[in-house]
Image (cartoon, rainbow, N blue to C red):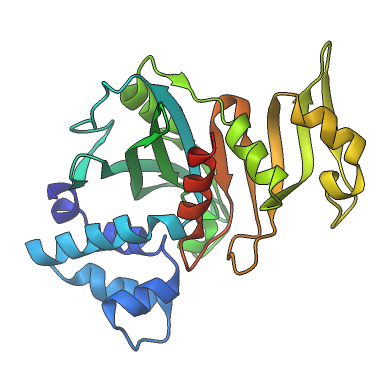
Length: 283
């Protein structure tokens, strides 16, 4: 918890700002109108209880965030790491999953006039151990950090470099574990009508092939001959629409063959958790 205690008010404010405003209002019982005001009010509070409250909030609602998720297969022996690159564990839930915060530093170049600044984020990363049927998985979930750095300055800016990347953190967590093949689980959801594919790169017998459907048209419904081919083919970079009623996620991307899933939008109800659970349980 010390990384939160040592962090500046601005660091904690940026951390809270990664979460949807509806969740902030609900948990912190705030009547403040603006998201920025809620984040600042909570970030200014100190003490062990407040740091614990912030960590629990981020852990609980991480599934509402934009995320990059990496899934690995293992033999049941991995344990949750004590710490991660440039960060530390801030919450441990009975050994089944843990929340970590890493410190990511951006070198930012400002224009008019030309100037260089540093922008720091507390980067939430969740590591989970899951079991389904006779398979064991390790999931590493990265909250996607804000890329529009101009919003933090009063003039145009762009990122020149970043101190730490997902690949570096993954190497310290997953080590030699192999990426999980998620084709079976994702194709089961596709077959059941839970999701529909609109764009994909996939492997034919002797070549790689790509398909991009017209707007609002899915492969299974409008191109059944191709769907039958893809059912038997390894899928790579692919875009899926979520067509289940009541799901707050409109779409997600995946590279099923390499165990990667991406959520590019917020979900106030945390429906990314349900999608991941369905993929794992059907894999």
